Image (cartoon, rainbow, N blue to C red; front, side):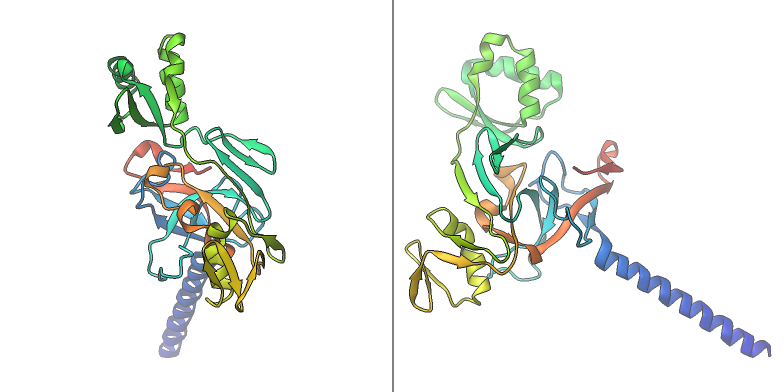
Length: 286
Protein backbone atom coordinates (compact mmCIF):
# COMPACT_ATOMS: atom_id res chain seq x y z
CA UNK A 1 0.00 0.00 0.00
CA UNK A 2 2.79 2.39 0.87
CA UNK A 3 4.49 1.42 -2.40
CA UNK A 4 1.40 2.35 -4.40
CA UNK A 5 1.02 5.61 -2.50
CA UNK A 6 4.69 6.38 -3.27
CA UNK A 7 4.15 5.78 -6.97
CA UNK A 8 1.00 7.90 -6.93
CA UNK A 9 2.82 10.75 -5.14
CA UNK A 10 5.69 10.59 -7.61
CA UNK A 11 3.30 10.65 -10.56
CA UNK A 12 1.41 13.62 -9.09
CA UNK A 13 4.66 15.47 -8.54
CA UNK A 14 5.82 14.66 -12.10
CA UNK A 15 2.48 15.75 -13.57
CA UNK A 16 2.60 19.03 -11.60
CA UNK A 17 6.17 19.68 -12.72
CA UNK A 18 5.31 19.03 -16.37
CA UNK A 19 2.18 21.20 -16.16
CA UNK A 20 4.01 24.14 -14.57
CA UNK A 21 6.86 23.79 -17.09
CA UNK A 22 4.36 23.81 -19.96
CA UNK A 23 2.65 26.92 -18.59
CA UNK A 24 5.98 28.72 -18.18
CA UNK A 25 7.10 27.76 -21.69
CA UNK A 26 3.74 28.84 -23.07
CA UNK A 27 3.99 32.22 -21.38
CA UNK A 28 7.56 32.61 -22.60
CA UNK A 29 6.69 31.65 -26.17
CA UNK A 30 3.39 33.52 -26.53
CA UNK A 31 3.18 36.28 -23.90
CA UNK A 32 6.36 37.72 -22.39
CA UNK A 33 10.02 36.92 -22.90
CA UNK A 34 13.28 38.36 -21.57
CA UNK A 35 15.95 39.64 -23.98
CA UNK A 36 19.42 41.10 -23.58
CA UNK A 37 20.10 44.40 -25.37
CA UNK A 38 23.46 44.21 -27.14
CA UNK A 39 23.36 47.30 -29.36
CA UNK A 40 23.74 51.08 -28.96
CA UNK A 41 20.84 51.65 -31.40
CA UNK A 42 18.39 52.91 -28.77
CA UNK A 43 20.65 54.96 -26.50
CA UNK A 44 19.79 56.72 -24.36
CA UNK A 45 16.51 54.84 -23.78
CA UNK A 46 18.25 51.43 -23.71
CA UNK A 47 21.90 50.48 -23.28
CA UNK A 48 23.95 47.37 -24.09
CA UNK A 49 23.73 45.01 -21.13
CA UNK A 50 20.13 45.93 -20.28
CA UNK A 51 17.75 42.99 -19.79
CA UNK A 52 14.20 43.76 -20.90
CA UNK A 53 10.83 42.03 -20.98
CA UNK A 54 9.09 42.05 -24.36
CA UNK A 55 5.32 41.83 -24.73
CA UNK A 56 4.68 39.27 -27.49
CA UNK A 57 0.88 39.12 -27.23
CA UNK A 58 -0.81 39.61 -30.63
CA UNK A 59 -3.13 42.39 -29.42
CA UNK A 60 -4.01 45.87 -30.63
CA UNK A 61 -1.20 48.31 -29.90
CA UNK A 62 1.51 45.66 -30.19
CA UNK A 63 3.54 46.88 -31.97
CA UNK A 64 2.56 50.34 -30.82
CA UNK A 65 3.10 53.72 -32.38
CA UNK A 66 6.30 55.36 -31.13
CA UNK A 67 7.07 52.31 -28.96
CA UNK A 68 10.45 50.58 -28.84
CA UNK A 69 10.13 47.16 -30.45
CA UNK A 70 12.22 44.04 -31.10
CA UNK A 71 12.15 42.55 -34.59
CA UNK A 72 13.99 40.25 -36.96
CA UNK A 73 15.74 41.48 -40.09
CA UNK A 74 13.50 41.25 -43.20
CA UNK A 75 16.48 40.99 -45.58
CA UNK A 76 16.34 37.71 -47.50
CA UNK A 77 20.10 37.27 -47.18
CA UNK A 78 19.79 37.22 -43.38
CA UNK A 79 19.10 33.96 -41.59
CA UNK A 80 16.96 33.18 -38.52
CA UNK A 81 20.24 33.27 -36.55
CA UNK A 82 20.75 36.94 -37.42
CA UNK A 83 20.79 39.01 -34.20
CA UNK A 84 17.44 40.45 -33.17
CA UNK A 85 17.20 44.19 -33.79
CA UNK A 86 15.71 46.95 -31.65
CA UNK A 87 14.26 50.26 -32.84
CA UNK A 88 11.33 52.65 -32.44
CA UNK A 89 8.12 52.01 -34.39
CA UNK A 90 7.39 55.29 -36.18
CA UNK A 91 5.07 54.37 -39.05
CA UNK A 92 2.01 52.08 -38.79
CA UNK A 93 0.27 50.28 -41.71
CA UNK A 94 -1.42 52.82 -44.00
CA UNK A 95 0.35 55.85 -42.48
CA UNK A 96 1.79 58.65 -44.56
CA UNK A 97 5.07 59.52 -42.87
CA UNK A 98 7.29 62.54 -43.46
CA UNK A 99 10.73 62.59 -41.87
CA UNK A 100 12.80 65.77 -41.53
CA UNK A 101 15.16 67.44 -39.08
CA UNK A 102 12.14 68.86 -37.21
CA UNK A 103 10.87 65.37 -36.41
CA UNK A 104 8.09 63.32 -37.99
CA UNK A 105 4.71 64.04 -39.47
CA UNK A 106 2.33 61.10 -39.32
CA UNK A 107 -0.81 61.68 -41.41
CA UNK A 108 -0.11 65.44 -41.19
CA UNK A 109 0.24 65.36 -37.40
CA UNK A 110 3.65 66.46 -36.14
CA UNK A 111 5.44 64.01 -33.85
CA UNK A 112 8.52 65.62 -32.24
CA UNK A 113 11.81 63.81 -32.04
CA UNK A 114 12.40 61.83 -28.87
CA UNK A 115 14.18 64.03 -26.28
CA UNK A 116 16.61 61.13 -25.81
CA UNK A 117 17.42 60.56 -29.49
CA UNK A 118 21.12 60.85 -30.28
CA UNK A 119 21.55 63.35 -33.12
CA UNK A 120 24.44 65.21 -34.67
CA UNK A 121 24.69 68.95 -34.00
CA UNK A 122 27.13 71.47 -35.44
CA UNK A 123 28.69 73.95 -33.00
CA UNK A 124 30.99 76.88 -33.83
CA UNK A 125 34.60 76.00 -33.00
CA UNK A 126 34.92 79.26 -31.04
CA UNK A 127 32.39 77.92 -28.54
CA UNK A 128 34.35 74.70 -27.89
CA UNK A 129 35.96 75.64 -24.54
CA UNK A 130 32.70 77.05 -23.20
CA UNK A 131 30.65 74.08 -24.43
CA UNK A 132 33.12 71.57 -22.99
CA UNK A 133 32.97 73.28 -19.58
CA UNK A 134 29.16 73.23 -19.57
CA UNK A 135 28.93 69.59 -20.70
CA UNK A 136 31.34 68.58 -17.95
CA UNK A 137 29.32 70.54 -15.40
CA UNK A 138 26.09 68.86 -16.53
CA UNK A 139 27.65 65.40 -16.65
CA UNK A 140 26.96 65.03 -20.38
CA UNK A 141 29.43 62.70 -22.14
CA UNK A 142 31.44 63.90 -25.15
CA UNK A 143 30.32 61.49 -27.89
CA UNK A 144 31.66 61.09 -31.42
CA UNK A 145 33.12 64.57 -31.67
CA UNK A 146 34.30 65.43 -35.21
CA UNK A 147 36.33 68.58 -35.90
CA UNK A 148 35.58 70.37 -39.20
CA UNK A 149 36.91 73.66 -40.61
CA UNK A 150 34.77 76.14 -38.74
CA UNK A 151 32.52 73.79 -36.81
CA UNK A 152 32.57 70.80 -34.52
CA UNK A 153 30.06 68.01 -34.97
CA UNK A 154 28.80 66.75 -31.62
CA UNK A 155 26.43 63.86 -30.91
CA UNK A 156 23.87 64.98 -28.33
CA UNK A 157 20.23 64.42 -27.44
CA UNK A 158 17.64 67.22 -27.92
CA UNK A 159 17.27 67.35 -24.13
CA UNK A 160 21.04 67.75 -23.67
CA UNK A 161 21.04 70.56 -26.25
CA UNK A 162 18.21 72.23 -24.33
CA UNK A 163 20.27 72.00 -21.12
CA UNK A 164 23.33 73.35 -22.94
CA UNK A 165 21.43 76.31 -24.39
CA UNK A 166 19.99 77.12 -20.98
CA UNK A 167 23.57 77.54 -19.71
CA UNK A 168 24.84 79.54 -22.70
CA UNK A 169 24.09 83.24 -23.25
CA UNK A 170 20.95 83.56 -25.40
CA UNK A 171 22.81 85.19 -28.31
CA UNK A 172 24.99 82.08 -28.70
CA UNK A 173 22.17 79.54 -28.91
CA UNK A 174 21.74 80.01 -32.66
CA UNK A 175 25.33 78.81 -33.17
CA UNK A 176 24.20 75.30 -32.24
CA UNK A 177 22.30 73.67 -35.11
CA UNK A 178 21.12 70.16 -35.88
CA UNK A 179 23.04 68.74 -38.84
CA UNK A 180 21.04 68.44 -42.04
CA UNK A 181 19.93 64.97 -43.12
CA UNK A 182 17.83 63.82 -46.11
CA UNK A 183 14.09 64.38 -45.74
CA UNK A 184 11.59 61.97 -47.28
CA UNK A 185 7.91 61.02 -47.44
CA UNK A 186 6.49 57.49 -47.60
CA UNK A 187 3.20 55.63 -47.39
CA UNK A 188 3.49 52.50 -45.23
CA UNK A 189 1.95 49.42 -46.92
CA UNK A 190 -1.22 47.99 -45.40
CA UNK A 191 -2.58 44.48 -45.88
CA UNK A 192 -5.04 44.20 -48.75
CA UNK A 193 -4.26 47.59 -50.28
CA UNK A 194 -2.68 48.36 -53.65
CA UNK A 195 0.01 51.05 -53.62
CA UNK A 196 1.54 53.17 -56.31
CA UNK A 197 5.33 52.85 -56.26
CA UNK A 198 7.64 55.81 -56.86
CA UNK A 199 11.36 56.54 -56.60
CA UNK A 200 11.18 56.69 -52.79
CA UNK A 201 8.66 53.93 -52.09
CA UNK A 202 10.14 51.26 -54.39
CA UNK A 203 13.59 51.06 -52.70
CA UNK A 204 11.89 50.90 -49.27
CA UNK A 205 9.51 48.17 -50.49
CA UNK A 206 12.11 46.17 -52.42
CA UNK A 207 12.61 43.37 -49.89
CA UNK A 208 8.89 43.20 -49.11
CA UNK A 209 7.96 42.80 -52.78
CA UNK A 210 10.65 40.19 -53.45
CA UNK A 211 9.55 38.23 -50.37
CA UNK A 212 5.84 38.38 -51.21
CA UNK A 213 6.48 37.28 -54.82
CA UNK A 214 8.92 34.58 -53.65
CA UNK A 215 11.68 36.31 -55.59
CA UNK A 216 9.78 36.27 -58.88
CA UNK A 217 9.59 40.06 -59.17
CA UNK A 218 12.51 41.89 -60.78
CA UNK A 219 13.54 45.44 -59.88
CA UNK A 220 15.79 47.05 -62.44
CA UNK A 221 16.79 50.72 -62.71
CA UNK A 222 14.10 51.78 -60.18
CA UNK A 223 11.42 49.93 -62.16
CA UNK A 224 9.36 46.92 -61.03
CA UNK A 225 8.70 44.01 -63.37
CA UNK A 226 6.27 41.20 -62.49
CA UNK A 227 5.95 38.28 -64.91
CA UNK A 228 8.10 40.29 -67.28
CA UNK A 229 5.72 43.24 -67.38
CA UNK A 230 6.52 46.68 -66.04
CA UNK A 231 4.19 47.93 -63.29
CA UNK A 232 3.96 50.92 -60.95
CA UNK A 233 1.58 49.24 -58.49
CA UNK A 234 1.76 46.40 -55.97
CA UNK A 235 -0.88 44.69 -53.82
CA UNK A 236 0.57 43.87 -50.38
CA UNK A 237 -0.61 40.74 -48.56
CA UNK A 238 0.42 41.76 -45.02
CA UNK A 239 0.91 44.84 -42.83
CA UNK A 240 4.23 46.66 -42.66
CA UNK A 241 5.90 49.14 -40.28
CA UNK A 242 8.60 51.81 -40.44
CA UNK A 243 11.17 51.87 -37.63
CA UNK A 244 13.81 54.47 -36.79
CA UNK A 245 16.33 54.27 -33.96
CA UNK A 246 17.06 56.95 -31.37
CA UNK A 247 20.79 56.65 -32.14
CA UNK A 248 20.88 56.77 -35.96
CA UNK A 249 24.67 56.75 -36.15
CA UNK A 250 24.80 53.28 -34.52
CA UNK A 251 21.61 51.71 -35.83
CA UNK A 252 20.30 49.34 -38.45
CA UNK A 253 16.69 50.36 -39.05
CA UNK A 254 14.22 51.03 -41.88
CA UNK A 255 16.64 53.43 -43.56
CA UNK A 256 18.62 50.31 -44.50
CA UNK A 257 16.06 47.49 -44.10
CA UNK A 258 13.00 49.10 -45.69
CA UNK A 259 9.51 48.25 -44.48
CA UNK A 260 9.35 45.75 -41.60
CA UNK A 261 6.71 43.01 -42.13
CA UNK A 262 4.30 42.24 -39.31
CA UNK A 263 5.46 38.62 -39.09
CA UNK A 264 9.03 39.75 -38.32
CA UNK A 265 8.05 41.80 -35.26
CA UNK A 266 8.48 40.18 -31.84
CA UNK A 267 6.72 42.85 -29.79
CA UNK A 268 6.88 45.97 -27.66
CA UNK A 269 9.77 46.36 -25.23
CA UNK A 270 7.86 46.71 -21.99
CA UNK A 271 10.06 46.64 -18.88
CA UNK A 272 13.77 46.77 -17.94
CA UNK A 273 14.40 44.33 -15.09
CA UNK A 274 18.22 44.34 -15.00
CA UNK A 275 20.94 46.81 -15.99
CA UNK A 276 24.56 47.63 -15.29
CA UNK A 277 23.29 50.95 -13.91
CA UNK A 278 21.17 50.33 -10.80
CA UNK A 279 19.22 53.54 -11.38
CA UNK A 280 17.80 52.06 -14.58
CA UNK A 281 16.59 48.81 -13.00
CA UNK A 282 12.83 48.12 -12.76
CA UNK A 283 11.80 50.83 -15.22
CA UNK A 284 8.92 50.80 -17.68
CA UNK A 285 10.05 51.46 -21.27
CA UNK A 286 8.18 54.01 -23.35
